[in-house]
Image (spheres, rainbow, N blue to C red):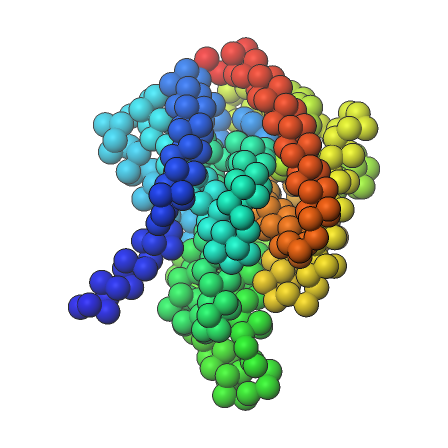
Amino acid sequence: MSFIKTKFINFLRLVFPSTYTELAVFLFFITCYGILGSYIALHYRIIFDSRIPWDAYFSFDNKSILMTGGSFERHPLSYYFFNGIREFCLFISGGKTDASFRLTLAWLSNIMISLNIIQVFKYLKNIIRLPLSLTILIILFFGIFATNIILSFTPENFTYTLFLLSLYNYYAALKLRTQEKIPATALSLAAVTIGGLTITNIVKVFIPIFFEKNLFRDWKKLGNALIRGTIAIIFYALLYLNRIDFKYQNIFSKTNQQYEKFSNVESLPAWDMVLSFFFGGNILFPGFITSDKHNMKGFSFKALYMDVYSSVFPYLFVAALLILISWSYCKNFKNKWVQVIMLSFLVDIVIHCVMRFGLHTSYIYGGHFVFVYPLLIGWLFYAYRSSPRILSLLTLTVAVLFVYLSTNNWFRMTEFFSFLESYYQ
């Protein structure tokens, strides 16, 4: 019994704030995000409108995800997860999809994104071991990323995926630091939750295993890793097949249909979509454009999308950020934690930038990788911890980027509220 109790307490300490500093950070962000989400939920119907299944803002599929979990080929097990979310919110709202229902959805998202912030904060403090002042600077910078702001009130797969990925990344980093193996139970749980919400992310679950100590020098350790991985894959596969009544042929046909649908959009130059949407739009809001949409059942509505950047300054911001993370990767190339982060990021780069899947709306996929930026910036600070001049230069650079980001995103959110005032009261 004491073993189970210890494991449970350790789990709570892992997921939730465990120090007064972490609690202060959590309370700060949950208050800021909470005010934003609560106001939107109580005054506008955009978070959930039963007539709008998808695309009301930035291509998120709020109603579709909440009611069905999304397409099974991309979100294999989210049906079960969002059934619970939906029923809980309906219980709170008395069975109505009214303001109380939207408010509950917003606060669940708020809590998840705030906990995501805490995971990144813990990583910076406990894995990289940065001074508190630098940790606070980076976490404030991260906190106003476009992805965090939007997902803080958006009931979508990406909201929960972002939290789970940042949590697992921190957990795996702790295991690597203490030179422990990731247990088969934790590996299976991560595969089911992370891969169950978005199938491509399951690859990221297994990346840290390759960096376990002496894995390729000891055949017993390698065999053990293969067994743990096999158990996780089998467990995941059985749940997935059970979800589709073992009609596995549907997986391939539906996947091909989705790839054809979301990878052949030629509306904008590929390089601009890569910079403005994939690398930029999940951090620095570009301008917005509206579009006329309908739900194919006679109801028309206005949708909001991100446009490519329209001036040189956002491109300079994105370029500066890419220089920082590239610099960090090169400087810390032999660092196994950095390799885990970059390999995880590479999965998304290949899917969206190389294979071009969803590239025209890749700003919504920030929930799969946006936590990579503050972690790599943190490792860059760590690499120059003994070089005061470069450290000062990096601090100044991040501070300037923070000021520009906060100013830009504040302005763009006023435009978002103008859109809500016009079409979603």
